[in-house]
Image 1: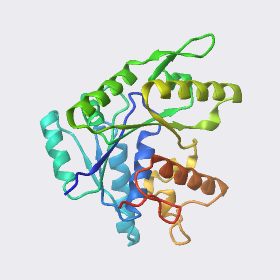
Image 2 (image 1 turned 90 degrees about the vertical axis):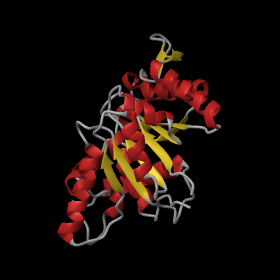
Image 3 (image 1 turned 45 degrees about the vertical axis):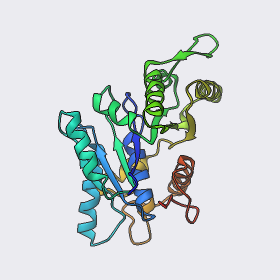
Image 4 (image 1 turned 45 degrees about the horizontal axis):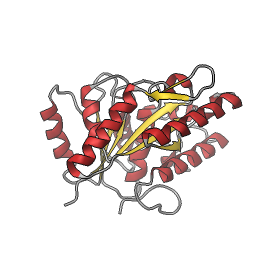
Length: 266
């Protein structure tokens, strides 16, 4: 039996949309029949774990069935225990999705080196860009890779030498609308230049929308909303957000698209 595909959402800076993106990718995959398990490594906040707890409660309260990934939290302090838990949850799944803390964490570093797809969400600002690369303060040209980018580069090289596998590193640009046009172009140019040096792909992410946050108590996503499941009033923003999610899922390139909507596991 083929091993599950590991998708790791990792960024040592908090507030970049890791959990929100991980949740929507997990449900997007599950909605097309993929067997998905999620492992939350952030033992303090447990945002992903709490989201799926809320989703489970909503399903029970409303008496409805929704696509539901398995969800777990890692609360041990041993790499061996982490490896054991991963082995247990991936035994009958197509995808394992990892949500990691927004800080330096040894377990987050470990799962990043074992990823098939590594997703690093960043907000569209040079504050966030500094995590992966340093720019010149005068001309905004990239001077060098940051410590984090060098760590991922070395992990990819080590992985290739060890088992011939490659880590598809994806930098996901979130909150694109918050920047003035000239600054946004500077960011675009700097990320494109760094992508060539570090070997990552760049894909569009999610804008800052209230809808993603207001659905947290119910554990629902935009993909769940329908005439019978509508805990919030629908608007054009919901339509725009659905397009964002569709573009994000397609850009990840995990498997084939089905019905032009969410990604299906083969």
